[in-house]
Length: 152
Image (tube, rainbow, N blue to C red):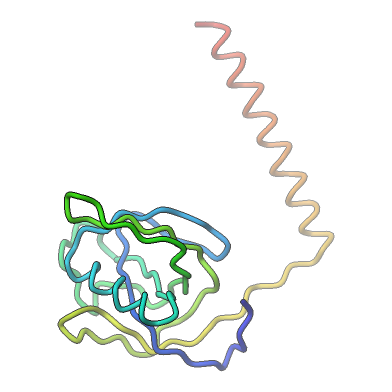
C-alpha cells in the first residue's frame, strides 16, 4: 500500500496501550474496552481498515481525544475473534503511517480525518551497512549469551 501523501482518509481509531504498531508488522492485539470493541466493529464495515494510535499514558483507562498521539499506523484487520470472556482478539497488519488532522469521539468510538505519511527513503548502500551492523551486533549478543550459560 503506497497511497499518495496528499490522500486524506476518514477512519476508525483504536487507542493502544504499551504497544506501537509499525508498517509491515503483523501482531495480535487483545481488546477489552467496550469503546475499542465498537471501533473494531466499525472498522470491519470500513474495508477492515483501522488506525492504530498509541496513548500518551498507558495508565489512562478511558482515553479522550487529547490522550492520543497524532501519528499512528493505518492497519488492516486480518482476523477477529470474540473470546468467551467478552474480549476480542484481533490480528492486524500495519500498512502505512498517517497523521491525524482531526480526531473525534462520537460516543461509540474514535474516528479521525488523517493523511498518509511518506515512508522515509534510505540509500541502498546505507541500508546494507545497517543490516551488516545489526547482524554483527546480534552475533556478538549470541556469543555473550552462550558464555554466560556455560558459566551456570
